[in-house]
Image (cartoon, rainbow over all chains, first blue to last red; front, side):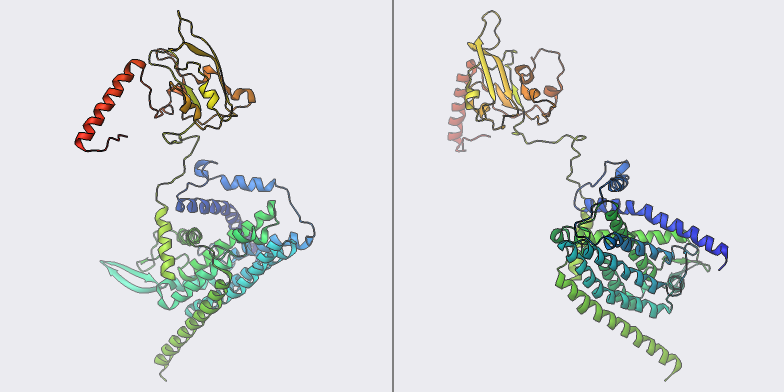
Length: 351
Length: 191
């Protein structure tokens, strides 16, 4: 790696992290307004045109808030926890392929890297719950760790399915695999073809379902927002946090929602590839980055939509869903693909 | 389970385009019920004279003791009301008032009614004592534009008490209606 390579990586890194940090307030606003509309309300629309500056104002408010540290809090850990939530959430953006040239680093184990960092974020939540010296926070942290354990399995197996189908752990590799034509069509003189997105592959549908459900659970979003559970635990693991430390939890949550959506886009929706390839060289109506962002925003909308629709699931039901449904489903899906591959192999090799 | 979830997702999606219930209050007027009990209005007859005859019945009926009336003999040469007396002072302490509407019920001439105005904030406690001038309906021949009385908010459904001369005619017509209704066999209740 030369110095210019490193320089470019730093520039890309700054752009992507900057964009994420800038996008989070608008995501929060979009969420609030969409949910409001689904509840027949208007939502925040007073600050700036259509309320666009609402979350900025909220952020400034948080900046000026008093930093509260509860009596008996384990101070170093209490200070560390929000960073442990936010930093891994931001780190995941390094490997996400926003476009053919818009990826900071193409790790050959990109998927594992993201899974690892997503799990690391739980430490922040558990430590926040532990260090705050508050029963609500502690319960939130406990729930988070248990929840993460049960859903990591489903998500992991969903990723295994994707890896088995695409044959690579690199996110760029997965996207490029999905850019290949699957089904050639002919419309007049035009050569069209549908790309091999995993969305179009029935073998990957259970994996998509598992990944989506697991994504809701991993990002602690409704209907799996048990660690936060306003109605039961005040605010869960961040009950005792205020000011910018609270904002960091918030930022971390939305950054991980973006990551989860980007992962769904990358793994199942073909990343930057258009849904229809036109001509030999795959003529594109929109630039790759636009396709990626379009899909990303759609998946984020599904996250918001689900939050507006579904009530919080009960704690034991959540465990049941994770261990008794997603895990067997994942194992079944992996076995299915293994059998399919074996059958294909046997039919080509002939034994 | 999945089907139920998808069905509920459909509901929320449809509601995204449904009309919103939010009223953007200071920008949009709030519609109050026709019989809403807001700030009081002291009414006039059509000829411009005050209805209030200074009888103190509202003040007596008021459970919050918010109304002060000081009556005086009606000057014959320049009458203020149609009665023997008129209210020289008519004050309502809006901080005491509980907007029960008993004053309305007590008034024999329907002089005091509760209007639709509910925006009654002020900076000083003294400003909450509404004087007669604040409550009085503008004179029908006056050219003073009063946003309070000219606004649509002042359109309350009260039963007007007819003038003395009309009263017998009204009773007669009611009786006539009753007779006709009985002959037709329809219930004599009209809303």
